[in-house]
Image (cartoon, rainbow, N blue to C red):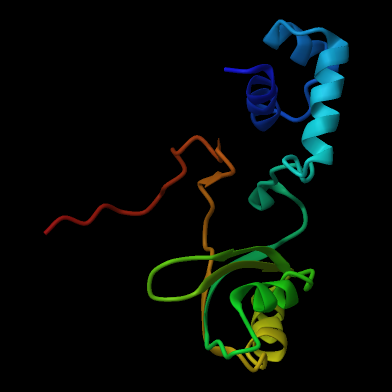
Length: 162
């Protein structure tokens, strides 16, 4: 693995590692790590650094929904045009063009289900090219960006056997 890929793998594991720690883990000089990280950021490979939050342990509530979108394209509009419009909305955490039964998968977050529903109905659904939306509310998150939440022993549902 080249040093760029190796440093990127370390950053994906934990972006809070210091340059010194990354240098020790990759057997690179600190100046090399700083240069590679700068290049990764300048090249748009690394787009940002964020905390992975388990909202069930936070004092603030947060509702997340997966929203499927179907669109109809015309001669002047393509998927990128529609995506450029949708990604500008702050409640949209992620947006992906996908294969399958729908065209886009959006992850939308807000403080309540009502707020998510209002956002989808007032901002996304009225976009002329959007022909259908289906909203799925996230009831529980077990893993986010490769990080498992909880110990898995909290399931207090009764088992049902036939």
